Image 1 (cartoon, rainbow, N blue to C red):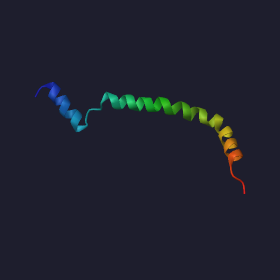
Image 2: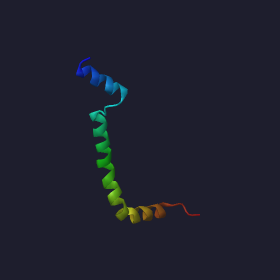
Image 3: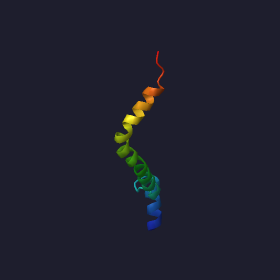
Image 4: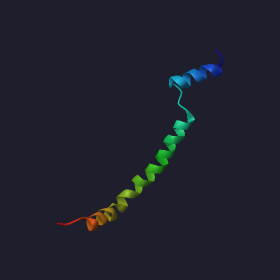
Length: 57
């Protein structure tokens, strides 16, 4: 077997992480972290909006 064949077999077996999976994970982190950082400061406005729009009765 050549090194290309071995790499292909390992990728099919799932032992070698693919670059696309790493890019997807990085994109998820870059999208999630700013939301988690900003939310504590904006939480009061979310709560105020929910209570104003709530149905009372």
